[in-house]
Amino acid sequence: ELRALMDVGSDHGEELIERCSSALHIAFDDLSFELGKGGEKYELILTPEGMRAKLFPLVYFARHAPASVREHWDIHVGRTPSLGALRTGDYCVEMTDVAVWFAPDGDGIALTVYCEKLLPLLREDENRAWWMLSTIVDQALGEIAAIRLIHDFVDVALRTSLRFRFQTLNKMIACFLG
Image 1 (cartoon, rainbow, N blue to C red):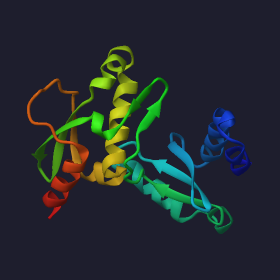
Image 2 (cartoon, helix red, strand yellow):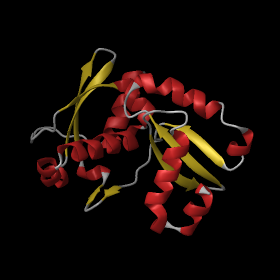
Image 3 (cartoon, rainbow, N blue to C red):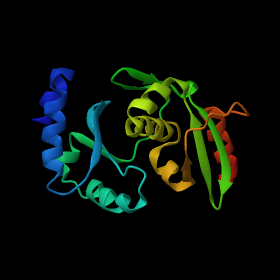
Image 4 (tube, helix red, strand yellow):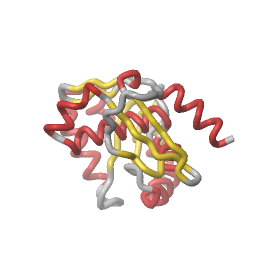
């Protein structure tokens, strides 16, 4: 049923999310996920929402999915790096719209971000603005790498000093990991 709804188009988005959520609720009390189609198979991306503790049950679920499901679905844990834009409602943010500062923090980094495009949203719906910023960070680095490396996600900065773009941050993190 889910595959048929995905093939019909985006007009059934809410129904698709509701049906998938109901099916996954059998295994998980609280779960965030994304659906898509990559190549020949459909994709289910289970997202731990930045929490390491959620990784283990998600990985277990993905590895133990029945063969009949894996025949048509690729199940991933965590968003993979991508350079696309993030669109939701009236807002569209590209990685080049986000300035990034970071500082070493133990064996990880503390990250500070600024996005002028999201300032109006920050005033009207702070939670949604933070979701967009954390999601675009996950898209830039990959969600699992972000969980591993980012120990502190600092308040949105209004700085005008040195700014890094995500491409630079990726190179610096690679050097940081050695």
